Amino acid sequence: MKNKAHKKPANAKTLLLAAFLTAALILGALMAQKYLARHGTGTAPVAPRQAGTVSVSLFFAAPDASGLVRESREIGACASDLSACVSSTLEELANGPLGDLSPTLPPGSTFRSVHTQGDTAIVDIGKELAENLPKGSSAEMTAVYSIVNTISYNFPAIKRVKFLLEGRDITTLGGHLKLDKPLEPDFRLESRRG
Image (cartoon, rainbow, N blue to C red; front, side, top):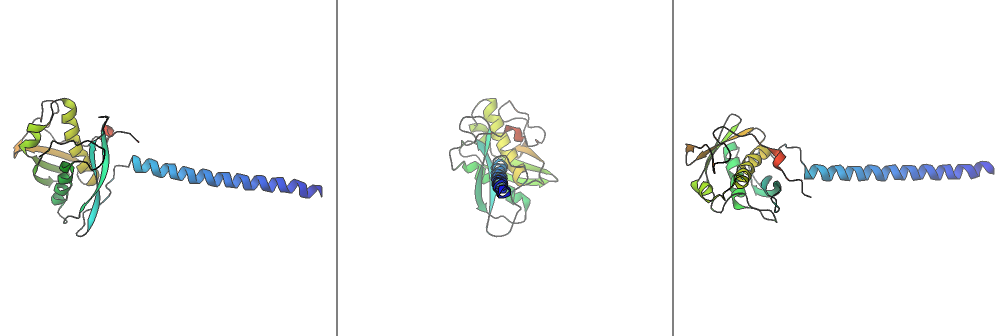
């Protein structure tokens, strides 16, 4: 009889330990999933396809100006031409955010053309973007890196972005950020807001 009394608590402790470990694993997996959803790995979520829609991540400004924040958007699937895919994505960026984020590009901003050359996207912006961009280094950096990060995140074959203004080389948009050479993405500018 003594033997049975000792086995019951040991079995209860084992079951309790197993339940605790299971709950800890589930909680850990959920936390890891939430972290990865919020702070992605920087790889592209989609590849160009022929039909249907694709999900892209656009980089807009956080409402508190703490950096760039991703917003997912469904856009029409583009043809296999990488330049056309990038152009469609940039048009959505120019349309502005759908949620509580702030636009990074002034209203009426246009992209005259986009083409790729090796691992570089060459983006020809319209004069409206440069003329209507708010003054200051923050506005200029936010606008430029929302474009660069959006392109590089969604299209990992593109490592750099070169800017043209109305078909001509450009050295800066507002005098604060050098654009005479192609820029690589800077995902450190992404806000860690929750």
